[in-house]
Length: 64
Image (cartoon, rainbow, N blue to C red; front, side, top):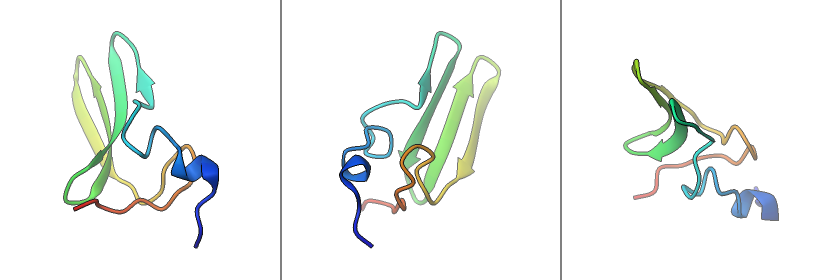
């Protein structure tokens, strides 16, 4: 599958931008053993394994 230009340059799944960033919340994609969507706020952190970027739809893979 070939990626579109938007998918190749997506700042969210390329790790260059937070999905949401405010004074009390931050949501971002993290590439670890698996790919996770993290949400952190004053009450703690939640994570969920994801397989596709929620913004551009690109299939996400762990970068070793």
